[in-house]
Length: 299
Ligand SMILES: [Zn+2]
Image (cartoon, rainbow, N blue to C red):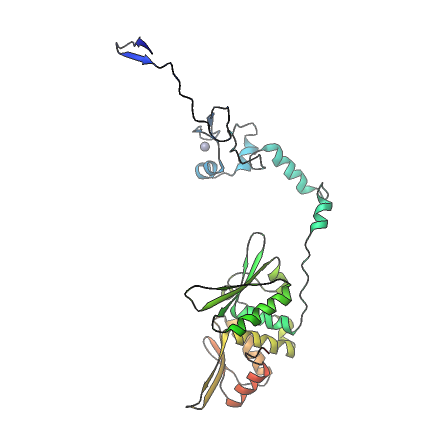
């Protein structure tokens, strides 16, 4: 070490030994160069989407278009250039969007998955009833999930639903018992489930779902659909002391209750229209309806 005299009279020691700087990942042999943001002039290790959005409410493609020659800094070791960070890739992507044929067209055709249409029959009508009653349809970026929530105690019902899903979608459904709860989910992931069922994804009450018209206007299909609805959202109560029997369908969606009500009327029943239920309470009607839909009989 060599002592040197500063202008203010202090003595400083200039260190001859420079400890090696820790190399950063992906920048082997390169100094981590700082770059300046073209918008706010802030010094950054790299111009990131986070910075652009946080500070300037701007996404990368717009930034790249505006500053094609901007130095955005070194890329992380595990990332390559994308259309978000590179103008020429962005242009290429834009060009390919307008073209009908490109290098991978044949490959895409060979590997395209075709989802078979679901045949409109009694089992589909029953499945739609089940979905309307106790199911949810959720959309994900690349797939959809159909989930039916069941009572864990009703094992036969769970197996019946799983079997319906397996035969309709040609895929084994998952069965998941929620811990510490009396609920079991039966679910399946596949593309275009909602389109093929003719139902919309999301909240059933907000969407104000109803029974599809191809089911409503066919007696056999309507009965199968009622089976699905009553088995998921319904109950049968037999009170021998009071000589009362009821079979009812409970649901908060008004349009669904109206549809169930009108089908029951057309079948010759006298249902009660409640705030959140449709109920049959005449003794002969309860038993004949139970027999008609083969309520909770899966043999
Ligand atoms: Zn900035």
